Length: 105
Image (cartoon, rainbow, N blue to C red; front, top):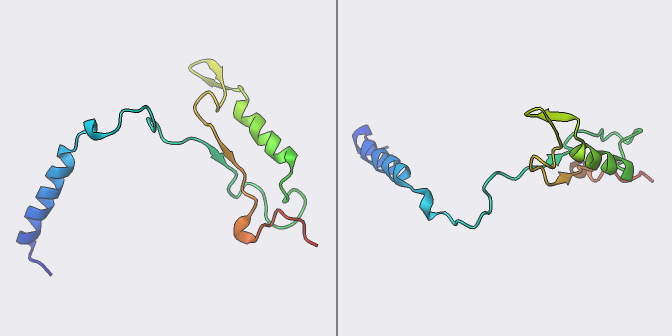
């Protein structure tokens, strides 16, 4: 293990390098200005093969309609999640449980 005195210069140099990093080195192509926004149905639907556990077109349609629903107010104006930049919806069909959305035979 290195002595503390030997580690301080290394940490100081690393800190200075990080602080000197400038955003000018990023591409200015308009991509990734904000983090990706979307909604995932992680653990939203049960995976017990009971009623409602198999994803259907009605489930997907309801999620899509919720994304464009303007029932929430943003700065006093009705706004949808899609207008706020949420541009994808991912439906979890329980793949970690070997596709629990598939009907059992």
